[in-house]
Image (cartoon, rainbow, N blue to C red; front, side):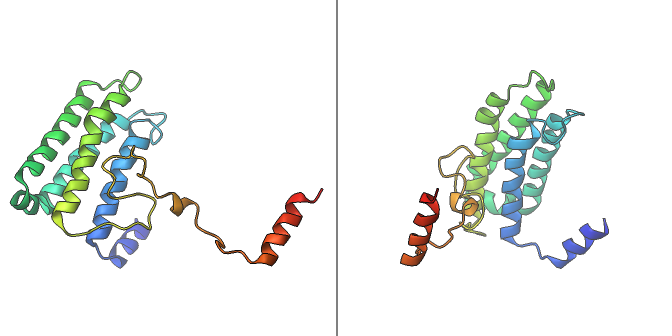
Length: 175
């Protein structure tokens, strides 16, 4: 707790940190929460997903809702409806072993992630960046460009010299 308090006070909350954190939380729900990776023994991933989605709605309501309502009432309404539908689906399907993850992602989480990208853009508070693992403009995590591949494979010497090429060939073909 001391570590957490120390680090929280040292970092200002900015629009960038806010949007990156919420984006990562949505990805965490899809990749770790409903899969049980976070809670392999307790199998509480589904109920924790309910809490996460309700918390996202609450944070949105206290921060961005008024701004978005003034700019795009339909987006605000749609986001609230999509959160409610996802929570309802989770609550009606609480059995971890029989939970239909494909339907949940396709029908409930993808609309929420689409909403969230639209909310970020509509807010005008942060444009997104391309030096992180995620493409913050991808409407879902299943788009061809959802992840920044160059982030995971940073360029190392894209312009090798003739000597480096010769050494590489020598090492490669040496038996």
